[in-house]
Image 1 (spheres, rainbow, N blue to C red):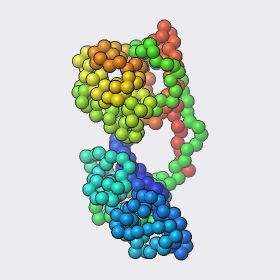
Image 2 (cartoon, rainbow, N blue to C red):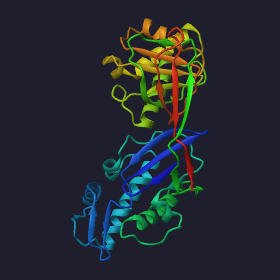
Image 3 (cartoon, rainbow, N blue to C red):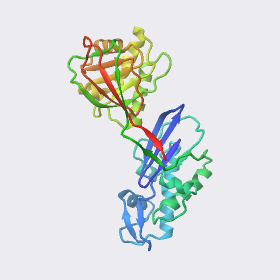
Image 4 (cartoon, one colour):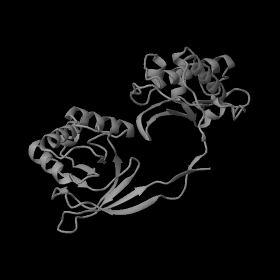
Amino acid sequence: MNVDVGGGSSNIAICKEGRVVATAAINVGGRLIATDENSVIVRLEDTGKELASLVDIDLELEQVFSDESKQRVADALAEALIESIQGKNTLKTTQLLMMTAPLEFDEDLDEITFSGGVAEFIYEIEGSNFNDLGLILAQSISVRALAANLPIGEPDQRIRATVIGAGHFSLQVSGSTTFLSTDLDYPIRNLPVVVPHTPRRKSSAESIKKAITDALKRFDLQEGEDKMILSFVDAVRPSYENLMEFSKGVVAALPITVAKKEPIMMCFDTDIGNSVGNIMKRETGIESEILSIDEISLKEGDFVDIGAPIIEDVVVPVVVKTLVFDSE
């Protein structure tokens, strides 16, 4: 697990075998309240004011922020963060501060690392007081993490991650076993890639639905509202029964999309695009247009453009756009 604690919020991500499997976000940060050199409040975020009120402290701009009040607010923020890390949501402060649904993960964690500005204080890289909550928040987080016996580690990079360049572009061509509805409007641009982590075995419709729902939560995407393409890796064996279960699961995971008759767009790494599209269109009764392409591997974080069909209208050109990251 990595917990990125910044100025206004903390973002939590759990990785397993090289992929993100759970995420959450909470309004815990070091600059929700800031003062001048005389401890007079010069910055007061709404969240900071509400949190202070919840622990019986009334704050206003240009008011002196006492050391005792700072500590109480920092402790309340730290308690909420530690509870959210553990997938709990029982404290009123946690309920106030959560920006997403509580973390869903029921396996043991090997290690928890911190990044972001507050992490510099947690790992004692930085010791200066910047007239905000950063230092005392970090100290309170450390005390509570130790008390909870959390497996805290230190990452190689804490705050120096930066984006370099505009990104990497590649042009690919789909397989010829695709299913393309005739009324789709090409080109289709800037589709974010969502990769559901489907079981590597015979899957039920319910397990496919859950995999898609979990993937949408990771990206904070709303099906039926946000455009996307679902990319599946070795997702379904090519038998009628398996394809039918898979199709039912996809449809069940996208009820708003189906109700609004919005397009369903899918990509497979194996040559089953046409089979999935045909069965989904014919057997589930949906009226949505379907784009089901295959023999292309996409990764979470990619964006794709899909051009008009070529080669007897069964093959589409796909531009894959990948951001390139490095660290200082």
